[in-house]
Length: 469
Image (tube, rainbow, N blue to C red; front, side, top):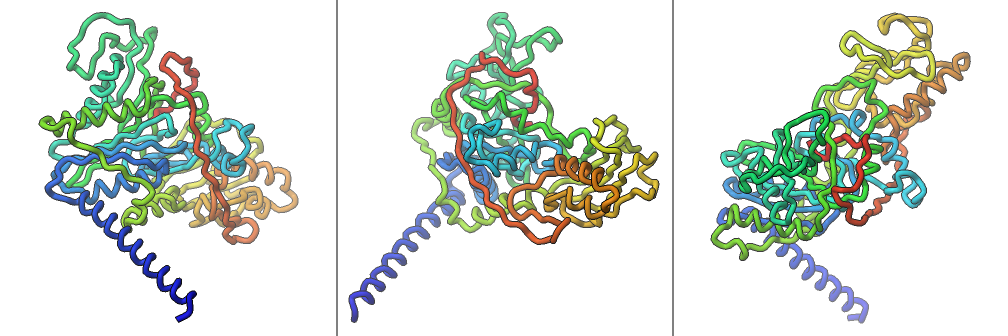
């Protein structure tokens, strides 16, 4: 036998041994998750990948024993996470996300955060901005023991143990920091009031939201998760990402985010994790509060088939955009949406009805017709029926093709405006105005970090979008 053949055989044996070890390792982890004897489990992720962390969380929801309780802590790289029933064109500045992906290495590009992922999670609620100054906490439990306040109260106790005596749970089940003047002693066990709680008033400072909540309920399990703002360096630029230029023109079904002033708590991430773990153990492991350890998870969990499948689904553009509930986009007031709109840069009217991300009705005219029902000579046939909205790459090309040379200037202006409303998104976009072929792209992810920022830091007056609703 030749020496090279012997080396090949050795390589194959080593590869098989490695695969067997990996299979045993992941099999042991999946068996531990599903172990009916393990009623209380705790996990911490070392990954910063939002798609992976949400997929691990979903796996724990599906595979853990129905009568068990699970704690999962993780931190994500910069990303915008929308709720299961939300509209990305309404909630997010998609053009800014795409600009960051197109220029990932340019720190001079405002807001200089690098690539920011857009993720649609599987739970309800509103839009949240994650970065490495947040810790996401998740508790999975039996539906019979679930309440919307129970585990938010647990996190408040963890914060108070670290000296954050302004923390409480409000009427929306969010965690807030009271900003009032200290009035006196209150019951320390009351997680819904602090010495700084003041009655709502126009001249009194509003509490700062530091952790919202979202939920997912199944027949056998209940999930409550939120994100806790500890030391985010990005508070001043979050409004840039969460302000959609298309918002004034969209009438949407589904859930819209609720505006709230937000702030950093100003404590170390590891201290927060340790305190939450401690109070989770006190709640569910009172006899052995210091003897229960957390299992560390990470990229290796992608070798679990169900997690890999969920991960690929969350990353797909179809999941991100085609799950969007029905909405209309209209440039002018309609019977169903009589709001006044900002003026268009060109005399035109646009009406689109979009269902699950695909266009079902269209009306586009380059004349200021008196009604969207008028079939004027300037009406454009864009032939967008059943077209996926996120796959339209170049609206200028689409409109120019329909408007013809005699309306070239107006058509180009309208196309540019529509592109600003519905910008292209990452890879797999379609230039239907030219060839209809898929144009693959490349996106690069860059992590970002920043220094500690306390709650005393001045917050911009425009910072209103909630981190989690």
